[in-house]
Amino acid sequence: MKYQVLGPVAALLNERKIQLQQQCQHLLAVLVLESGQPVSRQRLIEILWDDPDPIGRDARLTRIASELRQRLRGVNPEVPDPVPATGDAYKLVMRPEQADVHRFHAKAEKAKMLDGDAAIQMMTEALDEWTEGHGLYGRPLAGIVGTWADSNREKLRMEHRSARLFRMERIAQNGGHEQVAEECRMLDDNADTMLDEAFVATWMVTAYRAGGPDIPLWVFRRAEEHWKRSLGRSVSQPLTELARRIEDHAPDLDGPQDIPLARLKAPPTASAHPLTAITGQAKETTTMSEQGERPFFHNEHSTIGAQAKEFNGEVTINLGGMPQRPEPEQTGQSREDTGGGAS
Figure 1 (cartoon, rainbow, N blue to C red):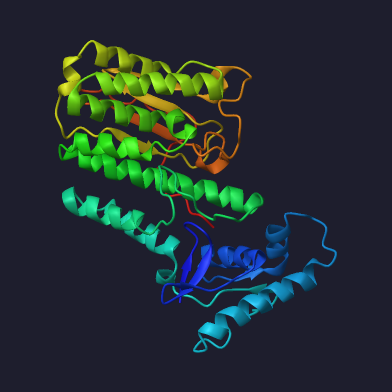
Figure 2: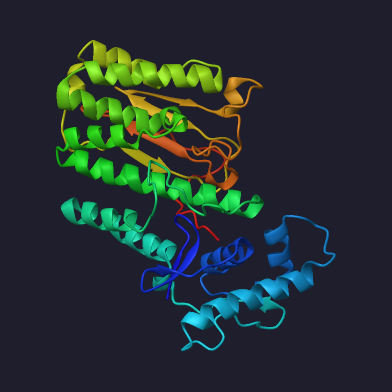
């Protein structure tokens, strides 16, 4: 038995989907993301109905869990009770490797410990766990609605984005700028993609190194249009500076090929989503608090995650070629790399 949440939620036996009604899919998604750990009935009621009114919910949860149990047991009788009640909670009898999300996490973490082609191959295998329309962000938990689904979907989307950018960075380090530029073109599948500063900068730099200024400047103009239409403001100063340097054929843009194009850092807590870019030797950070009262993104569940609460993070774009100034010592809140679980 395999479980899928990185796309439409499903249980599969021998690659064949088991028919589940939507609330069974919702319950299955919660239990899969909890990796077999018990989830209290009260918490499940809050998740499945997104409603504090408990009237009738307890009995309905019992019926949904019973139906899910029967469906799974009907195709896999070797597990007599795949959704056992443990005290006042339910859990899913499973091993982490049975679920696409846990295989993705394991492979992505392993890729970050490898170098060169091995890292690229392992991250490619991690991304292959996603189904039905990858894009830059993926489409996890498809068909599941509610606050819990929105929050976890945003976390998973940002993990997909991080994995994509990591893979493209490593390919670029190997000199594969043309490949990365083409991949960026293929990933440009929705308006939010062009609001993503790290993605746009990566596309511009790799396209420039692959074939000159025409395509990256076209990418920049498209980003300008999307920022004005969606955000009501001009593109960030770092992207504007990058476009100017591309137009001027700045020598450092043709610099060492092994300079990372993008790094992602996510502080454990943050009140804003800094978009940070390094242009030459100068570093600029733009945060929500510096942009007045207008929200940086209109939707708190934007695929970019600018207001996705615990997924607020820092994006650093290294354009390569020039030595960077050392980071100033942090004051106040410390910043640490985080993995961002999805449970």
